[in-house]
Image (cartoon, rainbow, N blue to C red; front, side, top):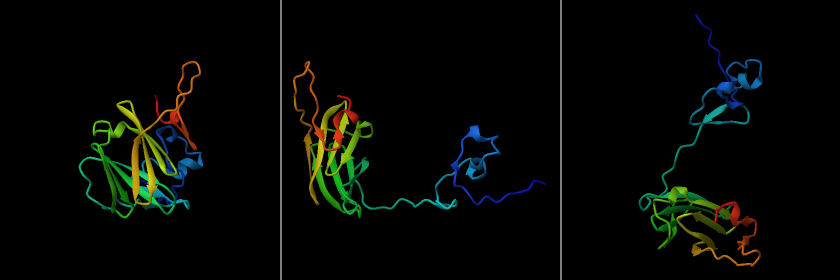
Amino acid sequence: MGMKLVQTNFSSGEIGPLMDMRHDTGAYANGARRLRNVSVLNQGGITRRPGTEYLATLNGRARLIPFEFSSTEQYIFAFGDQRLDVYSTAGALVQSITSCPWTTSILFSMTYSQAADVMILCSPQMATQVIRRTSSTTFSRTAFVFTPAVNNELIYPVSYTHLTLPTICSV
């Protein structure tokens, strides 16, 4: 009859199949082959991950993206078919923007970057878009405007504080 061991330390998290025969390492002793629906605690133990909380009913299929203006002002963007619904983290609808250039077919392939009060959205199927927080309850959407600079016939994009367009979009 085999001996059962109780494992109380998972500080190494999941270990891959290449570690199967590495009994000599601390990672092997403090890891697990598979951890699902748990969070590893700093102390080595594990706890069940928090569940999903119902906040609001969306207007059809949507992609949810967080928008963090500050540690006290956070929003949830629900990108839907030609619309953007902005929700508070409590689930209250803050604002809806309609007539947007994206469709459900490109929602999950759009790339984005956000810094301070600006989010830039990119996709090969639409013009680059800028979403700007103008107050705690209002947002605006505009097409990204490039500033032309003649240098070997290249056009250089505008830079937004820490955010430079080529890092998130291929133009």
